[in-house]
Image: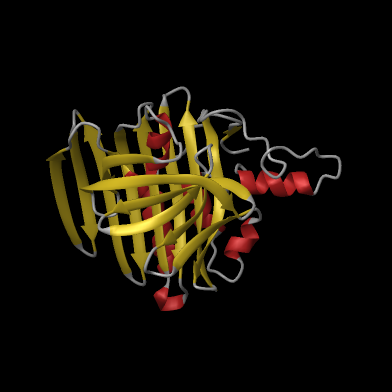
Length: 288
C-alpha cells in the first residue's frame, strides 16, 4: 500500500522527460551505515539542448518495512543554473510530504503538502541563489572551476524544505578514491558537514556524512546497490521515464574497459576523461 501511494505521488508530480535531454551523469550508489548496506541512490543529470535547461533527478531508498524511507527529486534550472522548478517527495512509513515549487522573476512560489495539511509559500530569492542539487555544476561553471585549494561560498535552496541556507565548499587536493582521481570536497550546509569525492567531470564517486557514519559509494553494477533492498522498476520508470542503466559514469566505463582485453589504459584506470570541465562530455540521449 505504501509503495502504491509513492507511485501515485510521483505520477502526480513528475513531468515526463524531454527527448532532447542528453545525459551528463547517471549512476547507482549504495548507502552504507558503517559496513551495513542500508539503501541506494539512483541519480541522473541531464542537459536539454533545445530548452537550454539542466535537469537533476534522483531516487533515494533506505530501510525496510515500516522503516522504509523513499525520497525523490526532479529539478530544472536554466543554462546558467538559475532555478526554474522542482518537485520533491518523501515517504517515511505512512508519512508523506511533497513540495511543488516554481520560480519566476526572482520569486519562489511553492505548495507544501504534509499529511493532510497544505501550506503555500511565496518569497523573494537573492540573486545567485540556486538549487542545492546543482552545486557541483555551479562549481564547474564558476570562474575558478573545480580545482584544488579553492573556497566556494554560496547560498542555495534546500529542496526538502524550500528554504535558503548559506553554504561553503572547500576543495582539497586531488587524491585517489577507490582507484580514481578525485577532489576531496568538504561541504558545510544547513549546519551539517559532509565530504564528497568528485572527479574533474563533476561525477560524485562517494560521500561521507561526517558524524553520522553514513557513506555512499558509486558502483559499476546497479545490482551492487539494489540487491537486498526494496526495489520498484515502476517507481523508477515513473520518475525517470525508464529504468536507468546507470552506465554514464567513470566507474561503469572503467569496469567495461577492464572486461575488454584489447582496451588500452588511460590516465584514470583506463577511463577516457576528456579535457577540462566540459559539462556535456560524452553525453547520452535520454531513454537509450
